[in-house]
Length: 289
Ligand SMILES: [Fe+2]
Ligand SMILES: [Fe+2]
Image (cartoon, rainbow, N blue to C red):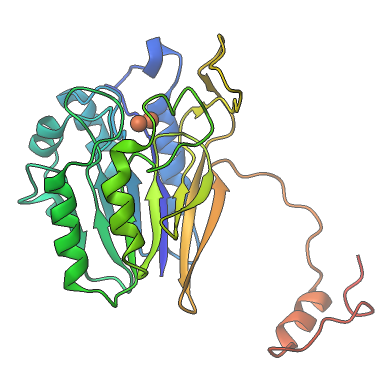
């Protein structure tokens, strides 16, 4: 199974740019969708882990719908702190969001890996939130299929990243979530966004992966104090591909833009590689660089 993860698309109203018109997030999600549509083999689905829009308004969700009409794969949406819960649920008429509420939490059952989508947003602040009601819902869902390989997706990573600007609130909000993750070894990956760059760590024994944004990236500043200057940088935008193979989840980070190919394999080398059987070693004399 191949799961593509896009995140933090920050779509704005048609014809506009994000962050005082400085970032063409709409053009950038369009490029990411082109790239995902061209992937071979074809992924099974796409997860978008929040901050779907920049301000959570109806016209931004209308633009998101227009953009997603071009995506040729099934997709599932997660809410982020830039989204608005009621507006999102009112504006998006997708089967996976039907009947969802009050929190934007649901499961996807028909893939080899079960998907559990969580709502880590607050009505009043930008930081992560995970109340007892959400935790009880997650516990109940996990109890339904304790043996199934499962991916949990939520917007806010449940750990401090070392980027002090993003860590201001600390990780206490996620304590209950971390305890739940620790008790369920069938959770093969926890997929997050929000930090706008690729980050991985273990939390409660589970591997948590943060995906780069399809748009701007958060400046990589690991200093003890936040510094004046750019909050964001226009590094090459990226996404992740999570491959479920041989009973493990393998995460690849990819860039939206394609770069020139070099050193094409010759027909002879390709034939030699195709002839190889499992366990057979490639001899230095057969593959010369
Ligand atoms: Fe974001
Ligand atoms: Fe966010």
